[in-house]
Amino acid sequence: MDDGVAYRWDTSPECTLERCWGMFLVTRDGCGNLYVELTVLDREGTVIGYTNDSLSEIRPGEQAAMTFDAVEAGADKARLADVSCY
Image (cartoon, rainbow, N blue to C red; front, side, top):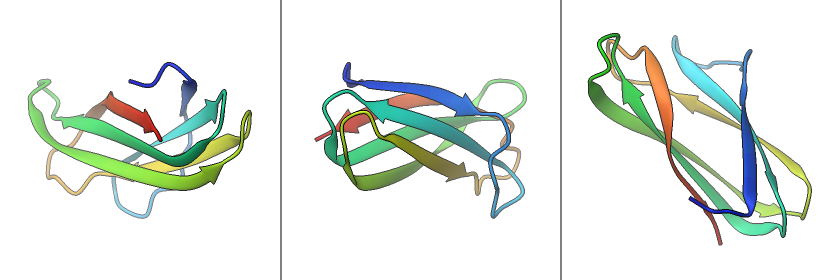
Protein backbone atom coordinates (compact mmCIF):
# COMPACT_ATOMS: atom_id res chain seq x y z
CA MET A 1 0.00 0.00 0.00
CA ASP A 2 1.20 3.50 -0.73
CA ASP A 3 1.52 5.70 2.37
CA GLY A 4 1.04 8.87 0.30
CA VAL A 5 -2.56 8.01 -0.65
CA ALA A 6 -5.65 8.43 1.54
CA TYR A 7 -8.98 6.84 0.62
CA ARG A 8 -12.60 6.48 1.65
CA TRP A 9 -15.37 4.29 0.29
CA ASP A 10 -18.04 5.88 -1.91
CA THR A 11 -21.39 4.86 -0.40
CA SER A 12 -23.37 5.44 -3.61
CA PRO A 13 -21.25 4.69 -6.68
CA GLU A 14 -22.78 4.68 -10.16
CA CYS A 15 -22.58 1.05 -11.28
CA THR A 16 -22.46 -0.19 -14.85
CA LEU A 17 -22.96 -3.79 -13.66
CA GLU A 18 -25.23 -5.24 -10.99
CA ARG A 19 -22.56 -5.08 -8.25
CA CYS A 20 -19.83 -2.50 -7.81
CA TRP A 21 -17.91 -0.48 -5.25
CA GLY A 22 -16.67 3.07 -5.36
CA MET A 23 -13.75 4.82 -3.73
CA PHE A 24 -12.41 8.37 -3.43
CA LEU A 25 -8.64 8.79 -3.16
CA VAL A 26 -6.37 11.77 -2.52
CA THR A 27 -2.63 11.74 -3.09
CA ARG A 28 -0.21 13.75 -0.99
CA ASP A 29 2.40 14.22 -3.72
CA GLY A 30 0.42 13.41 -6.86
CA CYS A 31 0.69 10.34 -9.09
CA GLY A 32 1.68 9.80 -12.66
CA ASN A 33 -0.29 6.55 -12.40
CA LEU A 34 -2.67 5.49 -9.63
CA TYR A 35 -3.59 1.78 -9.47
CA VAL A 36 -6.08 0.26 -7.01
CA GLU A 37 -7.06 -3.39 -6.66
CA LEU A 38 -9.90 -4.88 -4.59
CA THR A 39 -10.37 -8.49 -3.54
CA VAL A 40 -13.92 -9.71 -4.24
CA LEU A 41 -15.63 -11.98 -1.70
CA ASP A 42 -18.91 -13.90 -1.58
CA ARG A 43 -21.42 -13.78 1.32
CA GLU A 44 -19.41 -16.32 3.32
CA GLY A 45 -16.20 -14.30 2.96
CA THR A 46 -14.59 -16.63 0.43
CA VAL A 47 -12.30 -14.93 -2.09
CA ILE A 48 -13.82 -15.37 -5.55
CA GLY A 49 -11.92 -12.80 -7.63
CA TYR A 50 -10.61 -9.29 -7.91
CA THR A 51 -11.37 -6.01 -9.63
CA ASN A 52 -9.14 -3.04 -10.36
CA ASP A 53 -9.02 0.46 -11.77
CA SER A 54 -6.33 2.98 -12.68
CA LEU A 55 -6.08 6.69 -13.38
CA SER A 56 -3.24 8.88 -14.56
CA GLU A 57 -1.90 12.37 -13.91
CA ILE A 58 -3.38 12.96 -10.46
CA ARG A 59 -2.15 16.26 -8.97
CA PRO A 60 -1.10 16.66 -5.30
CA GLY A 61 -4.22 16.95 -3.11
CA GLU A 62 -6.57 16.30 -6.04
CA GLN A 63 -9.45 13.90 -5.38
CA ALA A 64 -9.77 10.88 -7.68
CA ALA A 65 -12.98 8.83 -7.98
CA MET A 66 -12.79 5.16 -8.93
CA THR A 67 -15.47 2.55 -9.57
CA PHE A 68 -14.87 -1.20 -9.40
CA ASP A 69 -17.30 -3.56 -11.14
CA ALA A 70 -17.71 -7.18 -10.07
CA VAL A 71 -18.17 -9.75 -12.84
CA GLU A 72 -18.11 -12.78 -10.52
CA ALA A 73 -21.42 -14.47 -9.73
CA GLY A 74 -22.08 -14.25 -6.00
CA ALA A 75 -19.95 -11.13 -5.43
CA ASP A 76 -21.06 -9.57 -2.15
CA LYS A 77 -18.17 -7.70 -0.53
CA ALA A 78 -14.82 -6.22 -1.43
CA ARG A 79 -11.71 -5.32 0.53
CA LEU A 80 -8.79 -3.15 -0.44
CA ALA A 81 -5.87 -5.26 -1.68
CA ASP A 82 -3.41 -2.80 -3.24
CA VAL A 83 -2.85 0.92 -3.83
CA SER A 84 0.09 1.96 -5.96
CA CYS A 85 1.06 5.50 -6.85
CA TYR A 86 3.94 5.76 -9.31
